[in-house]
Length: 176
Image (cartoon, rainbow, N blue to C red; front, side):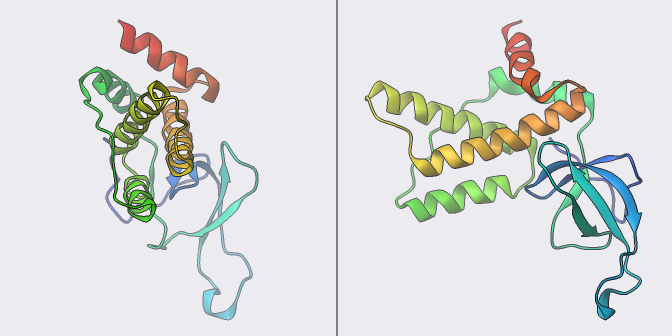
């Protein structure tokens, strides 16, 4: 559900993009910093994460960290409209390492629908644990938070609403 612009695409200052697992960032400028000799003349994006502190210098031509545009408002609303039809299944892995690898692969897919399905799966797992008077595991909690941060951050940017209003917005839309 997240669509990539054809490479090579040069983002411009002021544009929003999704930078790896950092999430939504604004391109502050395109610069050629005075770095090492091997990087001399190389262009970098100066990125300001919307929901974290700090700045990131990311090579314009790097293929190490996926960079893509934020989804459109229409794509965000279509994704939210899919929620009632998604059938979440709890992921049971034989080891914590296998569970971690599964969750990492979903997060690193940088796909909004995959993040949504992961969140719904972990939420279902949480409800099952609570019904058995147990707590959700730390790995599940960590990836639930990461998936929420990435997805809600992108939906916030796409819909033009504050981050804290994303969950209530989704709830209202799904109810209708």
